[in-house]
Image 1 (cartoon, one colour):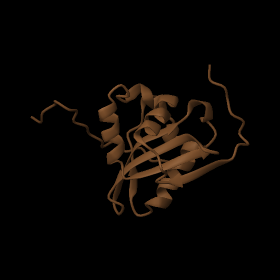
Image 2 (cartoon, rainbow, N blue to C red):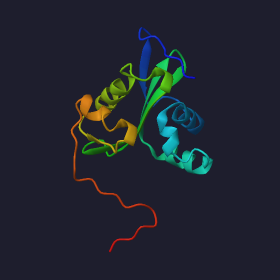
Image 3 (tube, helix red, strand yellow):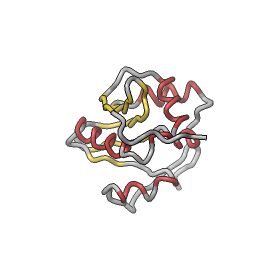
Length: 144
């Protein structure tokens, strides 16, 4: 059972912290994102981690409690591919602050994301705009 952490904690944020693929996997496991990532495929996870070019970590002391992983060109577009907050630390504003820190790190680029099913109601609540014109093409699918 997950215990709740008191709101009065001291969380710090760091852009491009010194983390590894194993830290990335660990925070995904402690968040709800682990359910939708290939955590069992270490090579794939390491490749995912190595191709992000902006990371923002949320820390309580030295413990990583949240992470935003972004792929960006720094001037036009940024894809927020992972917004992971340890389940014990959720509902305390950490995810929202991670997004703010991403904005500070890449102020010219628009932030784009695909919401996990459980988070679809979260993003409009914090002020992000819904965009109905998103399309995907999964591996193995072909264009007509």
